[in-house]
Image 1: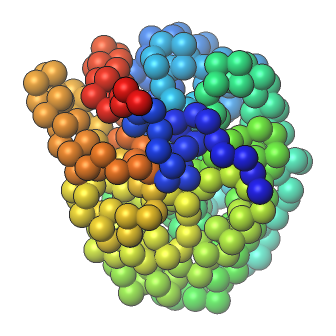
Image 2 (image 1 turned 30 degrees about the horizontal axis):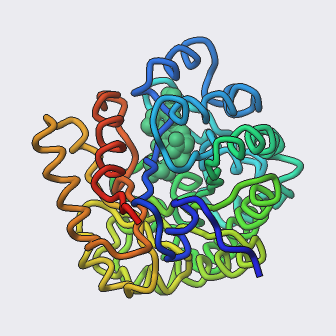
Length: 350
Ligand code: CP3
């Protein structure tokens, strides 16, 4: 048996009572911070991810600036695709681009399934560099990876998409190749996540960012859930809590929860209390402030934070977070105010 965790974040991940509601924010390291922009002004996104010392420094930037309850390793969901044979570029204005996208079944068969220790060494090294520093601050580190569908959408579209037309057409036209692709992705991500836990990650988060924007329930059950279950099952041996994040899945949240994950992370499109009822109150939940509320004046922002806390109803097992990542336009002062306010409002004097 692993001993009972002591930090509020890890306690909430297990549904245990915590001294206050823990807070961390998706994309907490990034362009809204001047310290981050300074580094990105001289180093490209991929060079930053591939430099363990710099990646560790950027991971710590929000930890040094705010009273956050967890750090998340600075990396991205897409670099593991490089090791599989895809040519990834973070293009300055258009976001991520894959120059040799998957367009036919043969493209799936030539994808490599390399071990993370061979291809993701820089991120694993950054995690091990951060471990002593974060341990001394009592801050757990979250490792992460993309879920098979969300990664497949980039691999097939060659970048972001509004309709997921090519991804869904591939899925319907080539179901056998789709299955092989999802199994390869689940295999690579499971190994990468297990290695992150080995290197020192105290929790893991799976980002299935686009599945709910692309697929309805019936397609989710046929084309996604079996592979997510495969991934979450393999992560059981990591012995750390696993957070399952998705967006746009309001219509089939119980099915998302059934795919796996110790904690279910929900977007801002649904009331948190309703979502919790859907997945069951014994399951810890993470969320779900609208990230754009951080661009509102304090009165409106506080109203929306209060609404999330009210929905959580003071139950154990709530991790305060956004419903999706922070935007670069977010004022730093609002981030500080949000974190301190949640702590003050939920602190129990016991
Ligand atoms: O949360 C954190 O602070 C850790 C770092 C992190 C990044 N990306 C850094 C990043 C995490 C957890 C991610 C995950 C990620 N990356 C997701 C899932 C989360 C989500 O938002 O749904 C997705 C879909 C990606 C793919 C990705 N990476 C896109 C679409 C973009 C371009 C859009 C954008 O915001 O610029 C990126 C680039 C990226 N990843 C940046 C950062 C800080 C911006 C790069 C820059 O500095 O220019």
